[in-house]
Length: 405
Image (cartoon, rainbow, N blue to C red):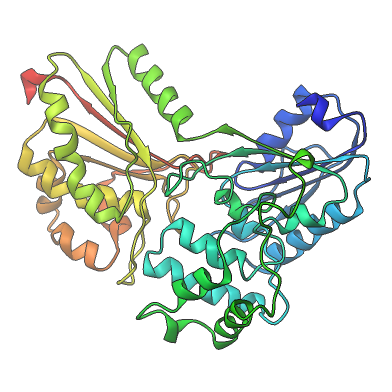
């Protein structure tokens, strides 16, 4: 990596939920001459060096600050020394934090389209496909703006369809994108979506389909020797950390390799049964660790996030199985949806305690996407505050062992 960066000046750009931590780590472990240092995150950059320009952008939806941050990032790339290296420290959330719409679409229209896709439960790769084709910075366009070499170090929160896919992490501002205007148009043109997408967004995508706009960066667009990309952290490291901690506490540990994906309420209903067989095979305290990232199709007006919804969907099944166990589903970023919780806890007593408080059945709260209210009444929300990283979600199930199953 040092040979790739070379001896020229480094322009440092950190973007995402882990921007501050990644920037501090890079500066603490390297001795490159820094020509400029810019960081973009979802909150105040209280712990970054004074020489760093900090920008607070909007998340999960971009805002005017995201627009300004995106323009600053493009200027960093355009103004760098041709003999230097642009080092991009990328983490989850960068898609919203760096937002520069293509000419012909306003930021508000792009936000409307993004909000509609989020509410529809569109998976992250579809959301990013549309974002890229409405953006002047995503889909490799930041790399196109760079005058010198580009090194990207990324933390991945991507689980599919290709795990840790650089083209999906942060909507791939520095790598080639093989999706097309036609694919983006097909996504927003699906039944039930098209009428809710701003007309100028539809017009721009159609214009791109007809060849009226340049496509995102393709594989042949930038010489490969001028770019290097490394994923330095992912859900697998988070799982490994959880496994190590559980073993230190004396648990027998099993990790589920296949990611937890799909609709949160479906994954939540399935998860207790998925781990029950493993639990019953053990005679000592047991921990089952899994990870991934689900989606939520918003149909109600309640509050919650994908981890809270997954946990809520598990309540009835945990009660039915009668397993003396506790399930926690949390976001590694410490923020689950537009709430102050990272996720929630469920055990075999949750349904009974909810009934004692005269709460409606979980299905009623699920229909309103109101998992937060349910778990708040029970005192079973997990609140960590922002963690400064983002590598997807973790599910941890603990049980005392087969004697109590």
